[in-house]
Length: 210
Ligand code: FES
Image (cartoon, rainbow, N blue to C red; front, side):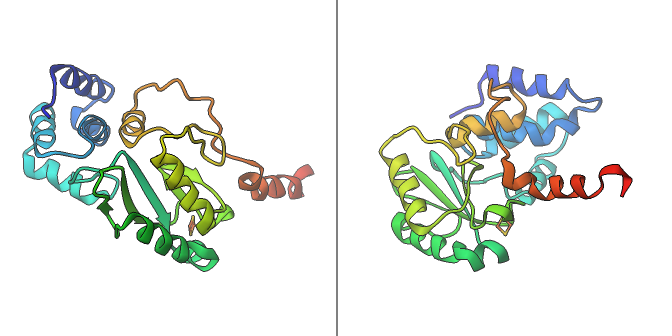
C-alpha cells in the first residue's frame, strides 16, 4: 500500500494545528497506522519529508512509543494487562488462555491477521482489574471465559461493545480517532460509577471545607 495524496492532505491538516509542524508528528504517525495498519517505512519517509526531519529522527519516535507498531497489526489489537493488580486478580491466567486460544505470544499476530496480542502495562483502570483492551477500548472485570468469548465474538464478526458501552471498532478505525479526526463518538461512555468512586468520596469528605 502507498500513502495516498488524500492521506498527505490529512497529514498537512494535522500539521496546521500546531505552531511548529514537527509537533504534529505523533498524531501523524497514528494517521499512518490508520491507513497502513502499522508505521511503515514509507509512512516514516513521508512524515519526515512533511515535517522536515530525517527518517532516522522519525524512526526514533516511532520506535520509542509502544503504541506505534513497526509490523502489520491484525484487524483487532487485544491487550491484556499483566501488571501487578491485574496479574494478581487473574490477568496472568487470561493472558495464558488467550495466548493459547490465538496461538500467539506477546506482540504476535495470528496467522489469519485477525488479532495481534500484547501484554500491556497498567491502564489506570485497576478499579476494574483484571482488564483487557480491544483496540484500546476497555473490557473490564474480565475472566478467562469472558475474554475467550470476546475473541470468539470478534472472530464471528459480531458487533461488540466495550463493557463501559463504547462500540468496538477496528484497530485502524481507532487509530484515526487517536490521530485527531472526528469519529462522531464523542458522547460514547468511557467512565462509570466505580471509576468515580474515589473522587466522589473525596468530594463528600471535603464538603463544607472540612
Ligand atoms: S494493573 Fe491493570 S489496569 Fe492497573
